[in-house]
Amino acid sequence: MFNGKMKAVTFSYDDGVTADRKLVKILNKYGLKCTFNLNSEVRPMVHKREDGKTTERFDITENADLYKGHEIAVHTCTHPHLNDYDYDRQYQEIARDKENLSRIFKQDIVGMALPYGLSSCNDITVKAMKDAGMAYSRGTAATHSFDIQKDLLPFNPTCHHKDPLLMELSEKFVNMKADKPQIFYIWGHSYEFDLDENWDKFIEFCEFISGKDDIFYGTNKEVLL
Ligand SMILES: [Zn+2]
Image (cartoon, rainbow, N blue to C red; front, side, top):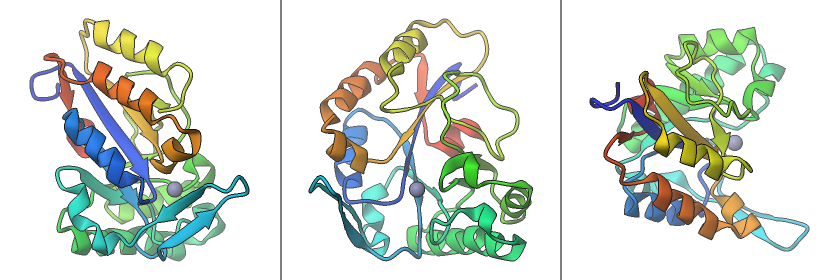
């Protein structure tokens, strides 16, 4: 149960980019809670794409206040394919990111999102995550399910915000009378809304899913742990 409720909604957004500013504003307006997975040792940079559009990673140390009220989680120091590395480097990528982020954001860091999802995760990664004190670790493959997953190292989300089934799933979730705990878990990158020009669709979704008496809105750790 989540604060006495059977249903919970949580969000998970990666990389720490300038579009997070707009995302946080929208989430705050609708009382929705998100976990932001950040890389503490990737330098700020503007990425110019072939289509002329740009995405931008900002300096997270200058944006600590932005994420107030939300959760910060590990996304590794430098966003590598973890399974290219031996145990020590994998552990360092996770443990040092955790340390950096807890210093910058002054909160306990207990979870993470895997860079490149489960494709960058092997048995060594699982051990490194456990040893670094991670209680959960998110992949990227949609389950299209709301069921509680027993093993959170790693686990997969319900769906990405661009999933063609997003609105269908949200109607099902809102109308559902749950007799066991159910989680609607949405993930993405906020820069995708700029690239895909679909902020409106996301706002529609937030309006629909928010403000329900029988749903708890929490960060990943509030909902998963
Ligand atoms: Zn990422």
